[in-house]
Length: 359
Image (cartoon, rainbow, N blue to C red; front, side):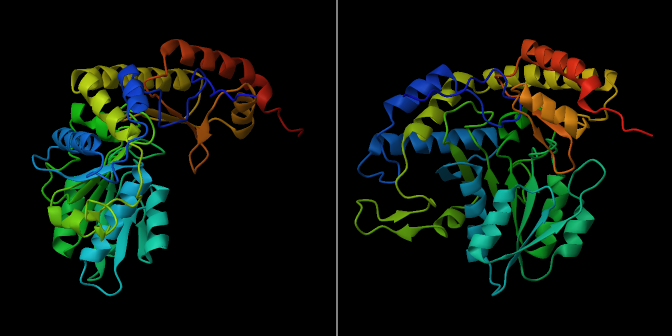
């Protein structure tokens, strides 16, 4: 029997979404090409260079270096790897807030570097003083998050940049999710902050490209060169990506999505989804739940575990933060009607989700 993918009509927890129609078509067209062998597949190699340039435009970098990765995990691993390999320390470490994405923990484990995580402030953002206190002469990299996975928060990147400069460390910004909405906000998060060396941004999230399509950008060519390994049996002599063979689907899909949506389409999406998140936060508050106010289109609310489980049983794809709050990501496929249906279930299930204990 042929399996069918599930509908997105009850998916509220994912940071990925349905691809734009043009992105879907491009992915199918370039499915069998391999950007990992650019001399053999020059058309997709040219598209990848174009995508890197366009991502540089989004992130305020006029001469970007980098590549289309399989996603934020690969990009973050490669950022840590580049910092490790460019460091003079024999025992390099990485310092990041405790809200850093789990891919950075993977990177530290795989690459054999120490990861030091620090507490965040009351608004779930990195605390520069704590980051500073955790650094030393062996710190190769400081990581800031621009659109955190749990709360959608943006760390104070300029302040982290000052710490990185004083320490002599590189600065990496993980904007895998937030990178396609942050250009329409007042946050300082990208290469306009002079201390930023590398940045992760994923077209297959809010960029509305097909999976897999991540992105790693670097200010200096030497950073990408530090990742290169020789590929003697290919026509191209080196390769900087973590993966070897890569389908051109993600590259072409990202190019098509950027052509269709940058900048005004992304601006409209951000404004619509941010307004939706703020409306949802207000609805939760009216129902008596504690809410983490959304700074980007992500809402966290303190629903009890039994209500959460009941919503899952009703088919809603929702998730929790580490602290246990319900977490809803207002991706482009999430609509007002969808959330009204969800809230109707919340209201219907709330009284019977957690029966009172006997005195």
